[in-house]
Amino acid sequence: MRFAYELARGVLPRHFSKFSRHDFTVPQLFACLVVKEHQRKSYRGVEALLRDADHWCRDIGMRKVPDHNTLCNAFHALHLATRTGKLLDRLAQWFAIARQLGSVLAIDSSIYDSRYRSRHYEQRCRHYATGDKSSANRRRSRSAKCSPKLSVGVCTRSHLILAGRAKTGMGSDAPDFDPLLYDAWRRHPHLRTVLADAGYDSENNHRIARLDMNVRSLIKTGAGRPSEKLPSGYYRRLMKKRLKGSQKGKIYGQRAQVETVNSMLKRNLGDALRSRSPKARREEQLLRILTHNIALLCEDMEG
Image: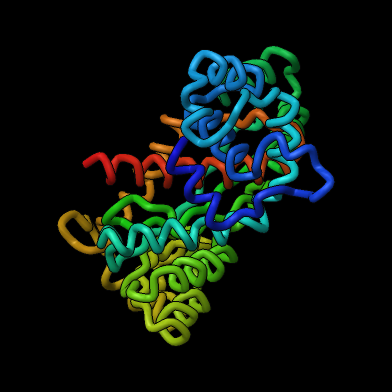
C-alpha cells in the first residue's frame, strides 16, 4: 500500500477538483484500490479490511477509512485508460535504476471471464438449456464478442509488464503488436529482441520492429490458412526456417515468461472481472497490471 501511494503521489493529481471535500487525496484512494485488487476484495470487502487494519491508512496519512462508495467513485474518476501510461513510465524508471530490466520483450494476450463462473459451467448450461446447436453457437458468439481481452508486453528478466492494452472481443492479436512494442521500447530503449506467438504473425509487424525500432523480432508463423508453402514475405519466410522444432535453450524459448505472467495475473488477482460495463472492465484490467508491477517492486525491495 505504501509503494502504491508513493508511485501515485509522483504522477497523479492531489485532488480531482478544488471543490471536493478533500477528505482523501487521489494517491491515497489509488493505494486503497491497489489493495482491493491485491486482496481480491469487493468495495465493501476492502472497506472492512481497512477498518481492521487502520494502521495501514495512518501509514499513508489517512485519518479515516474511505467508504465503499468513495472507493467506487474514485475508481471511475481515475480514468486509468489515460493515466496508466504515466504510472508505467515511473515503474519502468524504478526498475531501470534497480537494474532489473533485460533486453528481451515477450508479447501475448489472454481472455478474462466477464463474470465469476467458469467456461465449463457456461458450456454445460448451453448444452442442457437447448438441443439446438446453432442456437448454442449464437450464444457463444455473443459471449465471445463481450469477452474482456488483455494483451501485455513483458520483460522476460523481471516479469515486469512494460506495456498493456485492454479491449473487448476476440479479434486478431496482430494489430496490438505495434502499440505494445512501441510503448515498451519507449519506456526501455535498450530492448533488443521481441518474441511473440503466431497470433502476431505479420510481415508488417516484422518491418515495424526491425526497421523502425531496430529490435529483432521473432514471431512464430502460422497465421492464416494452413499451407506447406513458404510464406511470401521475407521475414516470415525467415521465421518459418529458423523457428522449427523445440526452442528449449534458445532465445525464443523465453517467450514462455509472458505466459507465466498471464498465469500470475489470473492466479494472484483472479481470472474474472467484477466490473459490469466494458469500459470499467478495461480499466479494471489496467489496474491489475499496475497491481502486479507494484507487487513485483515490493518483492524486489524486500529481497
